[in-house]
Image 1 (cartoon, helix red, strand yellow):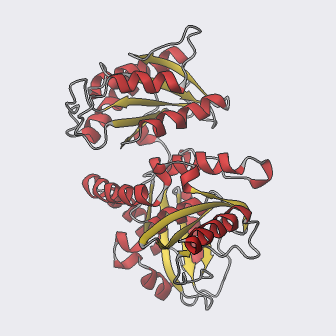
Image 2 (cartoon, rainbow, N blue to C red):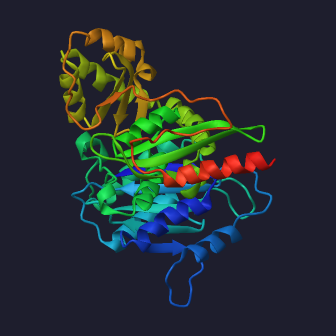
Image 3 (cartoon, rainbow, N blue to C red):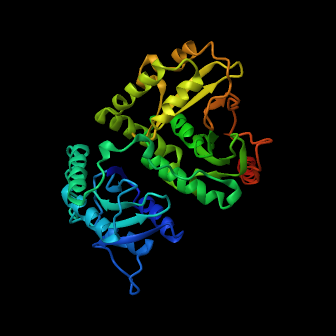
Length: 399
């Protein structure tokens, strides 16, 4: 069983993410503690928010008081709802959250059912729950639970068995909801150290990201717009502003997330687990296609960025087992874009296996102005953004 621990400042974000799954029939509440229940005993977002807020002191000093944990059994583990509830409670007890308010959700949106837990990292007096050696304690706790319940050990689990979220499919409709659910899930569960790396991760799931930079009323502006992509990476449908999804996928929060991820990656030495796999695949590969195939066998997606002349100027390794999306240079000079371009310079093949395995350099540099927006010409409808731009220009003229 694999445990993933995410901390944050947005209680609403963690609860609404799970509630949306419940409303869509893709999840259900298994159990809860110290949470108000309405008369019909159906747990709602409003009741959850009120319950948690009652346990948060007003003068709280902890910057990130919310913890969002997912416990992921092996696909072959056959566990009842009662067993999952017991596992969640025992895990929380061992990690020091047993007396905290919490809600346990069972997610059924992918073949491998798993549970999500939302709780607080501070007690009623505002004192932070002890999180020393949290990663190591979590490993020890899940190992004990595996032995007690006869679960498949996480260490013996194939890298290829890491469950993958469903890609955005613009043809199924409700694109905004699809994008909202995936962007929040990926931002919270994967570790990246730049918005560019997050953008590359999203491209695997048919989501595009563009940064919107400029100046308005003398103040710098930095926003993000998301949109659906087809299998060939072309924009489809209307763009969705990050502000319509939630703060956690906005520019400011993503920057903070990058800083936290960098510390987490360094602290837990996550690059050391992936580097030997990359080295091994590289040693036996003569072409980019072979390199990509070898890595995919180990649950790692490789995304090249190249210019119009076919020169590699960027490369990102997305390890779905470690849940990292990092540029090659973070693993060392031997895996940087320049090094890979040199190694595969004789490779004239422009098609490597796997969708979105190459990204062409067709992005335009932003122009100076009151706002710099993405050029969606020929890339899908952009009525919402055009209307927004016109509104901003009218405001400026009136000043």
